[in-house]
Image (tube, rainbow, N blue to C red; front, side, top):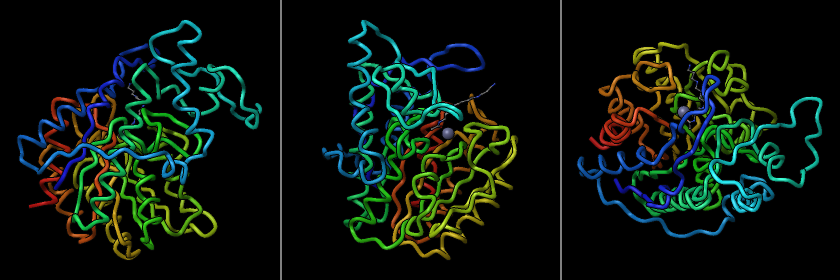
Length: 342
Ligand code: SP5
Ligand code: ZN
């Protein structure tokens, strides 16, 4: 399987985030992608390709144009105020406030275009976002042109980003961009299988009223886990999309047996849907040693995930999302991919 990777992710470095009331170094850090890339090489998964450059047309097919146009302006506006470090929002237009007026100043715009304080900007962030987008579209093209599968080694990740907002380390929703691109290239139906530990709220929001993208999501129960405000089992889709969104909220402590039962159910629904292509939002923060997550999957479980996805017998684009146990992130992520190929 071919991997697509860009070194430009590394400029998104030195971020800070708020965790349990303390400002700490960001868990979503450059070594994540570097360790995965090193494992792709040592496991001889296949060639590592540079992405092709793309304009932002495909991003604006699923994101609001004003949101995409905002992203490259963030850090220049921040620096124009004499600031450095991480640009992070702190005020949001929640219930009872005006959500229909885009303010003029950067602190307010950051809040307008986000749902949490978890998508910081540093100097190299926009270039990294842009490279991650190029990576996913390059991977999608490989699959469209006949590769059975490809691995888009995206960083930053994407599944928390919605049509008009960032959050949870995510800016452009790479998996959603790819799904829409496949449709625009002639696919009739696309399935997104999101196996990141966290609910892919952005992906769900983007496709919630649509029948041409089935979204299946296995994740920590939002009653107790981030992103808290979406991802319940009663969210089935709306209107034409009724029945095409499926959530599997699972409790803290979930191990392979019950996680795999949810995967099995999701795969059965996916097969019944009959998509032309599968996009896998591949997070490995389900790992037992993940520092911010509460599932208990073991390294030996990840190849079995890949093997089950291979049994779907469909063209497959793997898109990297979360996973913060960096010592094992390469073994776990590439374990899914070698399990798929074996
Ligand atoms: C792509 C992705 O995996 N994004 C995850 C963003 C998670 N951000 C919030 C993390 C909250 C961690 N809470 C841990 C509480 C430990 N006491
Ligand atoms: Zn996650």
